[in-house]
Structures are given as C-alpha cells and as structure tokens.
Image (cartoon, one colour):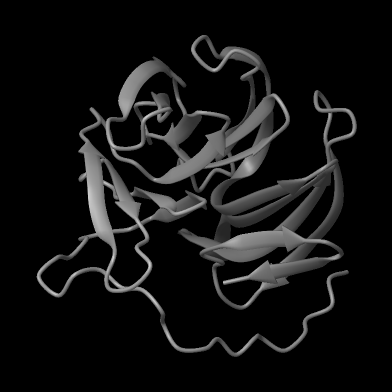
Length: 231
C-alpha cells in the first residue's frame, strides 16, 4: 500500500494577486519561466506574469465556451480540461495573446483532470454515477497539438478528483460510489475516496497497482521522484 508521511511546512507567500483583483475559482495552475496559466472555471483561462517584485501582473485572458478545470503545457500549446466541452488546445506561443487553436469533444465525459507526458495526454472526468459507472480514462495523441486524436478509453468505475503521471505510473485521486441496502426497502448511495495507482506500460490495458482508501477526497496529487504528494 501507500505509506503516509508528514506534510511539508510551506514558507511565506512571495507573490500574490493585486489587492483589487480576485479569481472566483482557480481550479489549477501551471507555469513556465515567469509566466503562469490559471484554469479559472467560468472565467476561462487567465495568464499572469511574475515580476521581479510586487504582485502578479495579468497579461491576458481567454474566454472559453465551457469551464476551465485543469491545465497542462505541451511546448507552445496549453491543454485545458473543459468539463462537458471536452479538451481545449490553446496556442500560447505569445503568452500575452493566447489563441484557441482547436478543441476535442469527449461525449459522455465531464473532463476535469488531465496529465501530459511526451506526446500523450490522459483525460479523466467526474461524471457522478452511484451505479459505479463513473467516467472513462481517455488517452489522446498530442504529437500535433493542433489536431489531437483519440487513442482509446478504459472504464474507470469512479470519478476523478486529481491526477498526475510520471513515466508509466498514473496516480488518480478518485471517488467511488455504489448502492447499498440499508433495510428491506431502503437503499442508500455510499462511497469513499481513494488513491489509485495504475501501471500504464500498456496504455490500452492499465493495471491497478494500489487502491488505498482515504479519509478525505484529494484535491490534488503530484508525483515527484519516488514520492507522491496529496492535497
């Protein structure tokens, strides 16, 4: 199973938003050099520059037809998990002028999490279903980000709360639900949160390495070296 260790103690914040600026819902952030990209829900994509001193400076914003839940960089492109609108691909070659390059529909999947390694992206959704259907784990070829192509899907039987990938290891924060009989004519939807580790050496048939029940639903997961961190 997974061995829990003490959490890190973080230091003082070194950068913040300007005093007169707020983001209603910052679902995810990714950065490169002095630029950061924020998946800001209904506000779409927000782009900030980190100055040498003082608060963050908003460089640009891009309205998206859906809701921006997660972001990942791939070269000069940014992938955005867009909920029921699927996957968005944004050209950020000029960070101050992001352009929506294309989108990829994901019928039946409310895509909330994505993870990129090499020329492959994994997408995972949060379709709630007490029957245990959950969402599919989708694979997308992004070797040419302007024309993403589906590679396949596998049933996850859960829905995603967090995801990260490192080489052939995929870490998923998930929620699983099912109907349980509480009495002669009484059924209740029950469930739990879990950390699921998948071996994706064979992407078409991922193997479960661990499925450890958690006390709380993870909001974030990150693989760093031989350690895994949960928020």
